[in-house]
Image (cartoon, rainbow, N blue to C red):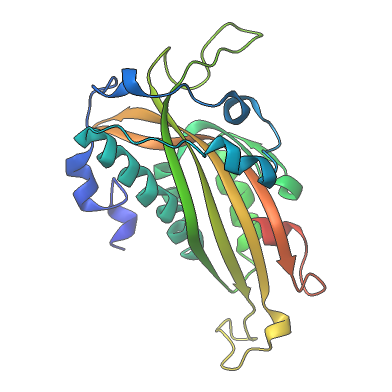
Length: 236
């Protein structure tokens, strides 16, 4: 109940969030990598290292707050899925988000994400999303849609961000009564290893400004015990 009522990932981040759409450190930021902003299927894992080889953090208090806010929102995604709290995903994604979940499909808009993930995970007894390696780069959104001539996420030069986050997700079966089995057969647990590649924008809300994912590509590294599960279930 506590987390479902939060308007930001954590209470202290609400105080750190800034309502200014153009923080003082924006002009010192690199342009957002076009490979992130234009890719529709994800960036191969072997190319990620070079993209983040020169990650920079501006020496500005609001930059640290922005990065921590994004990191907490990444974690909030896992909390929402494990708790099957689908409305909470509105605190993670923009309303017009585009998300490519590989075999699960491409979803356009927050409602599509909520509906698809609910249908995928409701039959699963319990899940546990464990995030590990996470890299966040604040950047200037300079992308322009070639067809419309419009900017993709924020207005020209506004602060945006790109990130990668590795997660290990365990999908646990349940007994006939719906409770987790007291003794688990390791072969009955599906473990998925996934990399999320996200593009972030800062949205104005009643309380100020909050970071949301506007674009996500999901790269499945490997899924174990697929003979008990489907490929789709390993990519949530």
